[in-house]
Amino acid sequence: MTPAAHLTTLAEAIAFAILSAGVLAGGLLTITRRNPVSAVMSLVLTFGALAGLFATLSAHFLAVLQVLVYAGAIMVLFVFVVMMVNREESTPIARQGLVTRAAGVLAAGYLFYRVAWLVSHERSMPLLAATATPPVKDFGTVSSVGALLFSDFLFPFEAISLLLLVAVIGGVMLTRHVREDRSSRGS
Amino acid sequence: MPTYAYILVSLALFFVGTAGVLLRRNVLIVLMSVELQFAAGTLALLTFSRALGDQKGHVFAFFVMALAAAEAAVGLAIVVSVFRTRRTASLDEVNALKG
Image (tube, rainbow over all chains, first blue to last red; front, top):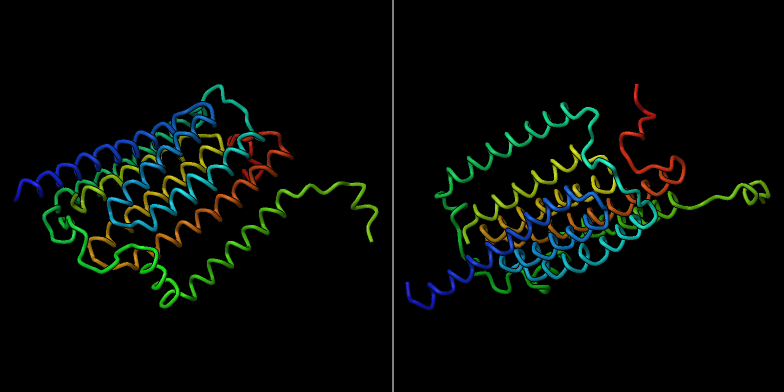
């Protein structure tokens, strides 16, 4: 390996370490914060670091979308709802039924431990050991992902836009405040 | 970095989200944990997309993102309308369906 290539690998490893540490620290902060506003801000950290990880996977389009959609739009939605519903908890972790919940977390933890063990045990197989971006032209750019989206996946794309429309109408209908006097006046 | 490192990060993030869903009782934090799980799934899709050299994973990650946005919008609307009628955001107190 040439010194320059070695340096690139080292820089990649450092970037990966910092970004994945940011993702996991942000995730842990999100589920442990007592104040929902701090949890939302930790979630922004998680999604920002995750966008960086997407960029290291040469998924440039998805990295930008991650920042726009998650760190932008969804976070604003969360902050507004936190503003309306903000009730600070006295105890963030529920006491009642704690044994059942802890058993659930332990079971889930064991499952993930086993999968992680399997992945690291089989890490030398070709699929899991692949390191570099494949030699595909324009991999992960807006034009190539968009071309795929509007050719092979046109029907799912239209279906997802219908889903978003339904979600918008559902959100409006669920939060609409119907006043009694207006409904009794009728048509 | 090799694929398995990204998959391990994705697994850890999904576990953090699962633990949040199971342990917390503030419905907003539970919704945020669900978003963490969505994000972990997106990371796994993009990782295998790179390992296989196939951009279909990017398209599916795009769909997951749109789905997560729709879920957040409807979920938060339900939170707001439950809060209006019951004045609470705690999952332990919203138990009218309990048998």
